[in-house]
Length: 211
Image 1: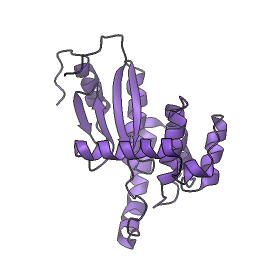
Image 2 (image 1 turned 60 degrees about the vertical axis):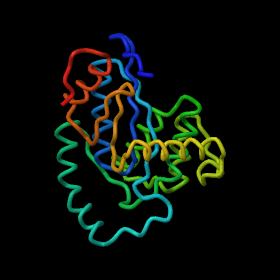
Image 3 (image 1 turned 90 degrees about the vertical axis):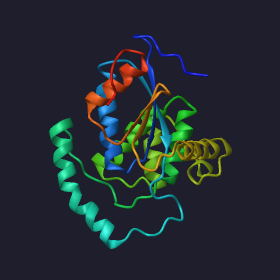
């Protein structure tokens, strides 16, 4: 069954697979914020771990490449969004952060947590693998993350994360950010705002070419 196209006044659902420590996911999130100021959208954030538990240690070459790329990323963020980045630890583990976001989402706070976590890592240099950092972020949203949530033992949040990962695999998503507009149009990568606008308009059934 095809998904009905939303009307012009109805928010278009935008499913987003993202990892907090991915620079392109930060850019994608900031562009979605810009898009939300232009037309109604409903972002739904999904877990995607670039370095899941058990992944091999990051190589020195990979770390050096990321460090070399960071100044250029900072210049881009400054020019496009007027923000100064202060990146958190390279290679930070995001397992607990994704479980915390699912807990937040079950209480209507997914968007706020996602924004706060991205800003904590990218603008304030914090380690999202540190449970104390996540609890501090949660406290600003009146959320309390216990050990079961942060260590992946809470049944509801653990299942939500597993479902996100399985859905990404079923769609063939291998990198992030990945956007699905209105369950109709897939956009991969930190694409320009204009392309995201066209995808949202196309999902509404308007005569707009996405490419």
